[in-house]
Amino acid sequence: MNSDTRTFRTGIDNYCLHPLGLSPIHLLAWAKEHGAEGVAFSGLTHKEYAQLTPGGLQDIAAFAGGNGMYLEWGGGRHIPRDMTTWQKTDVAADNLARVREAAALGARIIRSCSGGLMRWHPDSPPTRQLMEETARALAEQRTMLEDHGVILALETHFEFTSFELLAVFEMAGLQPGGPVGVCLDTMNLLVMLEDPLEAAKRLLPWIVSTHIKDGGLLLDETGLHPFPVPLGKGVVDLKGIMELLRSQPRPIDLSVEDHGGVFDLPVDRQEFIAEFPDLTAAAYGRLMQLAVETGEKMAQKTIAVTPREAWPEVCESRSANDIAALKTMRAAL
View 1 (cartoon, rainbow, N blue to C red):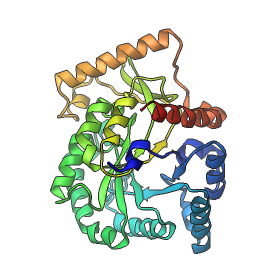
View 2: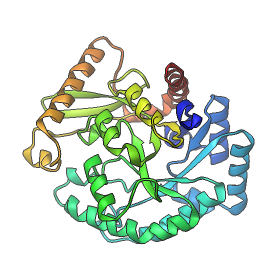
View 3: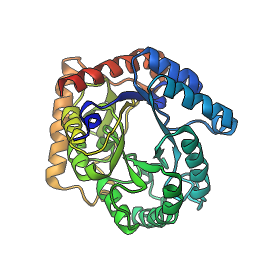
């Protein structure tokens, strides 16, 4: 067993502090000051990417290397479409730019997220069609990724469920341990109507990076409403997930990602539920159980929804507390 997989390195994703507008170097300095052991840059703004220079990348790599911090990069995409207009796009060109940046940084992981909530909008292309297009795009980029020694890590975001990700990988002819993997966002799985622990079990051989995030799941007459909460306070079985990750024969870094806001899942609409064909009655019952647990925590006032507009005021304190909480969880293992 690789000792690194038993101890983990704990860090932070730059999205936590996005409202502060920190440069990559200032973000690394903040992370070091608050005890983070690395930074996952899940993405920068278009302006920030355009301003990156070889010298700037060298500075980022030197700061991280000089302070023994891990680096993960971002900005990758996997669905070859504009997720607003649904026009086909050349994701390979964008990914190549990110791959070259990551290679210059010495970062092996590139987080990929296409964004979009297609199941929530009836005019979106069918999910199966997007899965097939994604599989073809990944197969075409395989050699490019291998040539640069990087892994494109598809986030468990709002495009595909864990079942669908596995189907995409199979269609693309991919295997675990290759140039494509998964960035496990532990709370986003609730948004996709999945128990995070069970989804982590399904995806385990593919997981190469993480967004460690806790959450709650509200239930009311309008549907289910997942939302992030401080690490260790919610209903996501982070201990169980970390135990799974620790069993793997490769190092996986734990990067805190936290934010405000709440998601609306209109589960009372049959057409919405039909967008999740792998959702079983037992799995839905588990979500109901998590909703009950969330209600109890809300009644005890141990958790509450943080509005998205309130996040800028609390992002520093909550992110710092999350890093400390994650280190405590690591020590408990």
